[in-house]
Length: 320
Image: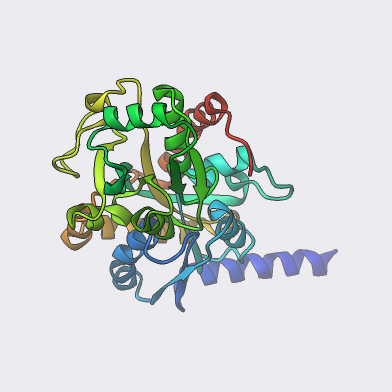
């Protein structure tokens, strides 16, 4: 019995010592989507600032698939030492567990929040060949051609998917969902004409809109936002009851020492204040949006979960 007590004390002392020396080696930042999408873009905006703040390299690792659930579960089952961090959105944290519950894995239980880092609307974009120039024209076209328009998303249950489902419900139209393994391939499918439209994150679609290769009809915010000049909000475009916003945040495995969580939070807060980060994200139509503390981020997620659960229920989204 004494040996077990001694071992427990030794392990506790070792854990405290490791936390105090954190970080002493590179940190993996795991992205649940393919390179080029919004999550990847946001991750790389923070990569160098976090490297400087923590004094160790941040290595971005893409693990796409299952609407980012593969990456979330991978991080949750990693060693809880702060060397594996997840960038996640409402899709992987709040929506996927509802539509595809998985035995033995619950994001709210198995992952700890660090901080929210960004917030932005999505952009409803269409291939110019569709021949519509406004949301009202798109609705009229879809009503005349039920089931003939294909919309791309970054995966079943993703925010872009739910944004389109809500649009269909409020606009009274029927479209076909084509899921991809990330925002970048989804947008590329619209560009190629394989699909006709997408509710896409600003980083994945804005450069193509600005180049005239895709057409932005509206943002998913109710009113226009200065982040995306020249594009109306959905309320202004003809659907006053429509509104969806989108965020990213950092998470670590449950059981990560409190000192490590605080170190990551402080480094993230430091990066969020840098003009180079806010400027880079602003150019992508995204704004920085930090949390007051890890606990405050946790409270925010608990409230936001109610909204996304209601959208999933109202929209009747099912697993593919």
